[in-house]
Length: 354
Image 1 (tube, rainbow, N blue to C red):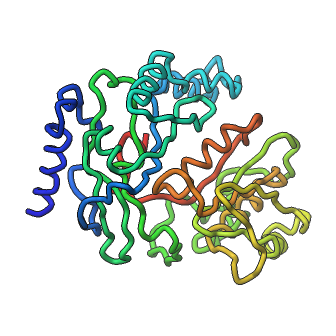
Image 2: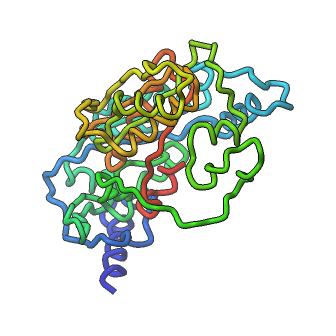
Image 3: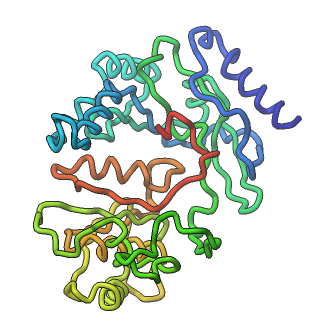
């Protein structure tokens, strides 16, 4: 009953708070508070919120079609990959959207900065009191019962009706943080029947219980010969204090890819205060796993490890959004970014996920 009462109070806030609300419409809303969190009262009015606003992109469906066209062998456009600038044309918001959103923010004395190359993401900082007025809502403090961690969020917010079709979402508003983001774990998978045939002559029998680079090469027909296109680049992301060890990679290659030079390694990029210390006791299970199998399967493909630090600017996303805009801002971003991290689906809004 308490949760229903809280939800009702939010909808009253976004529907009836001020005369301005007559021109406002609820834009995003949660059906309930995510499991594990409790409402702990109203947020302090002077607390500053770092918000990001996504504008509606001009043609995401066209971008998806272009992706499928260049990736489908039967397509006449197969292999004709788009340039970075061509991709950005699909993603960039319309001039009308930019003008409408900037006018709304200016009317509220808010100066936003663009944080994405296609100009589809803006950021600005305002106190809770102003955010409540701007979005016709009520930001509150929510506490994760098990960890005691708190966050300031809302369950629903509104935007002016005439900005429908221009604003995609405001973040972080109804997304909740992952309270266990800093606790990577290892689990033993249950005994299940292999989904692929690992008993054929082409696949070592050991692959039914332990997957090595040789297993992946045999199962998927991945060549063991070194890559020849040295301008390609494969990037591995690292979050939540997971660090990749070069010494561990060398040991891995000596055992599982002795045909590759033991000196084969990766280069490093950092953002949000990221680092990659090589102290053995700071090795990350997830980061080591990702780097070892990437380098161990993609034979001599130039590989970069990107370490995302704790100074992330994308709300509760732990740098997921930051790393995308970081790479998109490069003149020659990598062809592939691999990520083995995730977020609980019950904390993410549909708009943000898309």
